[in-house]
Length: 92
Image 1 (cartoon, rainbow, N blue to C red):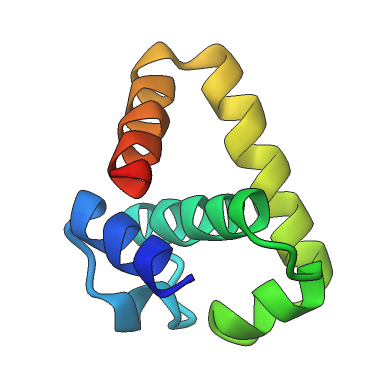
Image 2 (image 1 turned 90 degrees about the vertical axis):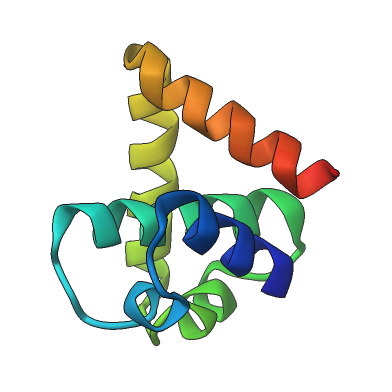
């Protein structure tokens, strides 16, 4: 989980503290949602546990984030490329 947070924050050039903050700036929200998406994908943690790790959010927020990232990657080719690149970074 630590590696996921570091990789996503480095990729989006956003401090890890901002990902866990209450900020609603678009670039920070997107980095936060991508972080939740990859934590859900690569760990066995429950949604509520993921939410706690990413700024004390509830399970519904985590579920919404995962659905948003999945839907956006289906329609936005550039975003899908970013997600694939983050996946490669996580596996290296």
